[in-house]
Amino acid sequence: MSICQGAGIKDVKRIEFSTRYLLTLAEDFELDPVEEQKVVNSIHDRMTQCRYLNPVETFDLEVKSEEVYEIDVIGEGRQALEKANEKQG
Image (cartoon, rainbow, N blue to C red):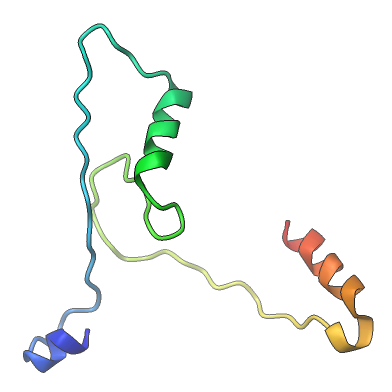
């Protein structure tokens, strides 16, 4: 955002970068959902990118922060971490 602010553009809150892929398949070839997911997984990074199945209408995030809690590693050691891991799934 500092680039926008440096250029005098004050109302920009977020900048998104997107990549679109067009896969052209032979007319008689069909991908089942499992094969389709394999293709998707092979062309993007699930940690930093997401797949939009519908056109993007907004980039507003509906993220709700989770409650912060403490893990007493000093007092309980490894058991505290294992308990937190189980709780978080």
